[in-house]
Image (cartoon, rainbow, N blue to C red):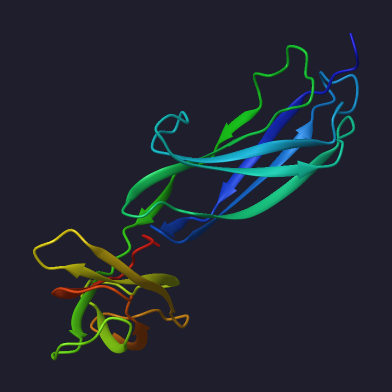
Length: 228
């Protein structure tokens, strides 16, 4: 039998509290236990997996995030890792962080590769509600192949700020027909405070209509089209 290691998750520490949908710190230590190991790890890369669970025994997994480790681990050697894991949206209450390591040959010593943290409390983060509140389009007939100006306004009608980036999708939909003309998608990026409650943004773009198209169309704008 080749020399085998015995990886042990020595400890798992977390922030005391977190907010749904926000980064949350998880730290852990992995050790090659000299009590059972007779050699260093036979591989130099493996994966540590962090899971957020609803139960203290590590069951009820609601999120899984893998993290690669690089470097062999000698007997009694260890490494510490600290990462930020984004908690799922829409959760609240007590949760746990489970860390699992493994990959190198450990013979039969694979029953200590997992450890679960103490409980931490997660507070529900009030959600935004992005709403298209206004669209301005030509009111007079236009000619196929011409350029037209379209503008739209998006408001956060929710209870919390919308942070980060998302896309607005603009298209023409035929009235009484099945034709759909995609005009484009446009990215909106907030400042660090996000698009706060009741705040709006507006955008105006010029589009060239397709040639050989006729009929009655309406403008459709879908915000957060990428579900970001």
